[in-house]
Length: 136
Image (cartoon, rainbow, N blue to C red):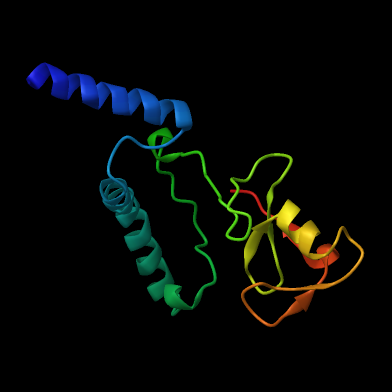
């Protein structure tokens, strides 16, 4: 039984490696990444406190937190409209309202680039030109 358990663990690791995903539990990966970031965040809080600033009011952190290659994963985005996985020829695009859709879904809703369209989740009218490609 122990041999089959080891074989199953190695199979999961090999499959995860091929897809660029972690073989570990997402919760474990998150906790470990957070534990690695704590010293940098603690130092940031001390520096900002000495300057009389609060890090909670910042839009983004002013420091880079180096986690190491084991925390770099292949991002997978599935369009909530088309239910397709993003690809280089169909990248994720962000609408002005913040919703992210794949390019093909946006072009279908706009019937090419010819007209404006309504966001499928909110009442905002937008155009293809106002949508921007995002990179994960």
